[in-house]
Length: 545
Ligand code: F6P
Image 1: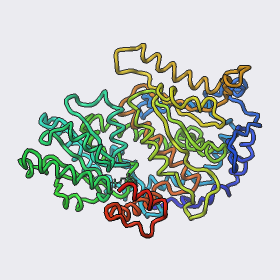
Image 2: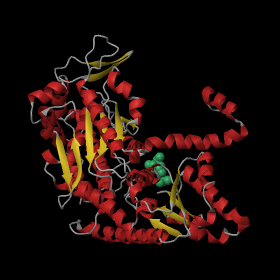
Image 3: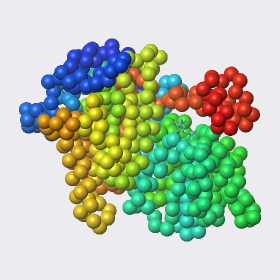
């Protein structure tokens, strides 16, 4: 069933469009790195200010509104303040064709095992499909099984919501089993059921667990142990400690009620049962951890906002799936934005991207995107194991506006290198102080404007060079539907960039080595045995004992 051209892509550098883009990049300011120096090579002719003067259609050309099937707006993306022109966009679309991006997309939506290093399908998108209509026949059974689990965990979420005895929900999980639900519960605060509190424990650092346990009462708390593998050190350690705390609470009075207060979300149902957790919701190895908020991993979110709103969250993402699958290339937003991400990293040398969500609810979005983008595309070899000679995923970091303005925006305006900023603004508010919102939005607009227009001054200390790129995403309101759409847009952007770079965006072998070495160090911290360790690690270990 695999799409025939899906793996025909070679190294991106061998694509004819790659060479052409390299030539075009000479007309743009490029971050240039060489031993002993990192600077902006600005011999370019491209200037954003002039680009707008010369092309009255530039905003329309490089912006797009996404709507759902009923023409309701989902989000608006304006990337006209990017360092690119129509020739670049056309060359990028050509590159996508040469790198078989759409063939790989079709293979993903057909259920092909496009995670080649692990021989797995990549089907997080199936979790948001409302029906089996239109799915390839072999996926219809998979959908039915998925739908049964989805209905079951959403029904469970409703029973928890209706149970006034449960006042606190604690999600114990890390990485993809934490960042998605943590971020979304915060973002959708306006939809969260009053009377229940939601806590997230991820770090193995006992301080984090302690801070949560001191706020909750065991008989009023539901613990969700979320782990795809149910082997992750942090989650298993936190789960074991929480279980022990629960069993010992109230002089052991609750010891036989574990099944009412602990739920497991995992593909490894057996391991959950071994911990004594009887209520479990499964998912499948075709859902990557960082793509799993749509599955039962989102249970804490489902309890917070309810089944109906959770389905709206899935619906928003599904609308973007449909768009990605069916829109013409020139109007395919994830395709266009993913290609611009490639252009920025690999041709303009933008090694980082700043996320600036101008909504405090989106505080945890940069952390969520760090995993999504950097764990997916932070790779240095191709699918065939060849070393890549270009930058792939940028470092993603950020803070909500306006806080970031008072911290690191200085570097963005006057630093010696160019780092693109991605602004996210939300039109409608959920508080009673429109003045606050006007000030917030004015700042978002002004920062993007300032980066571009700059400021001339005789004093070089005060001069802002301008011509600095940004992207502006706009949501009508922050709702489950629009948040779902936003996240799916990022997922598909990451997919597109990974496909162009010909890397496998769905494994994460780079995180394994440190985990293995930690296993070796744990007993040494107790015994003090430093034999075989490098001198620095040995010295630090001794100091930490
Ligand atoms: O850090 C690696 C990783 O495997 C992530 O990809 C994943 O989201 C996280 O650990 C947690 O894994 P699990 O859900 O299996 O506990």
